[in-house]
Amino acid sequence: MTQTKLQQPEAIIFDMDGTLFQTETLLESVHKRIFEQLRKEGLYTNDTPPIERLIACLGMLLDDIWKKVMPDGSPAAHQRANELMLQYELEELEAGNGILYPKVIETLEALHQRGIKLFVASNGLEHYVKGVASLRTIDHLFTGLYSAGEFDTASKVDLVSRLLKDHSLQSAWMVGDRSSDVEAGLNNGLKVIGCQYAGFGGDDELQGSDYLISSFDELLQILA
Image: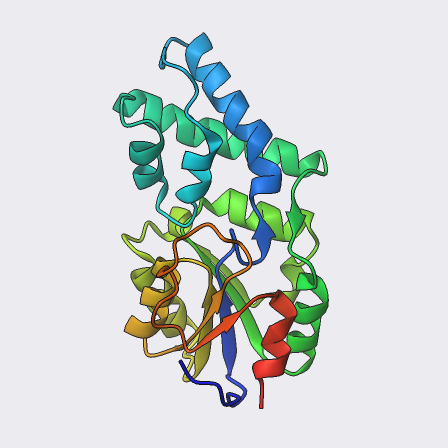
């Protein structure tokens, strides 16, 4: 992992959950409501899985999340959980629940003022990703908000590749907290900044990153 400062890139691409947005501040209520509703509809009869199982899956594609969270659930239960998750996340966001990590707004504004194009690339659903950005009033700072839900990509590698091509970007950083972010950055020839502050993954989650940061505003210290 390098320690010298990096030249200013043309763009910076951010993951959403665990990078910009402190997802666990939203999920506790959402998780409980999903399984209460699934039981009401007769789609799931077992006890509610521990929320830690859901939090550990953040960053995965939704289909993979439900296979991990409720492996005993039917395809119909998984599909309904997808629908309920989006509905309840947006309801909770609109109610004022869920927060950004400290210094996210100030840091994004500083990067934007330096002329760096800012993007989001998330494995989440389109309306959730755009809803977080809009309802937490950071959407105006981004050139584009990309999600697996909108573009139906099979991996974050593919999603970031599409973003780079769409905007003809020559240099960019990938900033995220999961191994999928590291993979997306490295496979697309980007510098990777690993975010350690979320703590969702294991010790080797961010292996291969060019830099590791323990708070979001450290991004400004990396710039040459």
